[in-house]
Image (cartoon, rainbow, N blue to C red):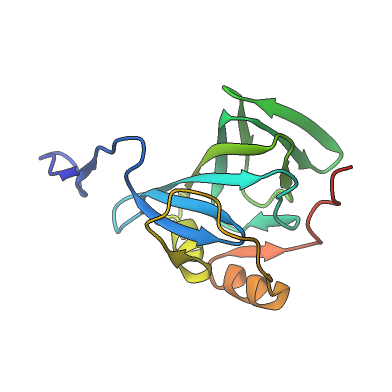
Length: 170
């Protein structure tokens, strides 16, 4: 539900736990909670990922990224720093710093907040470009991911892929 606030350039967004725009995204479920618009600075996306899931090492040209682990456990890696976050943990990853993460628990649910000082965050647009809308609120069946397509689409939205995804968990 969106309501207009007289002091805001964009509508206020108030969502219940399962509300938002759901997409099957690179073998996990992404729910866009807030899509940055003109005059707005941030995107908010909630993810549910399976054990072992992790994106390739990458960096955001314009967006700072804040992770909030809601359920499960996620390992974050940036440079030579590695840190395991459980439910209730936060990880702040500034723009231009290479990073990746990997789901350690059977599944993990986490939110990313991306924000930019140079204009609206483009993160949710990358999710939309690589995702497929769904009404199902569960993990999709794993499928093939084309690394070239992922790199090309990310580049369009200010994200540079720098390396492969994390190694499989033992």
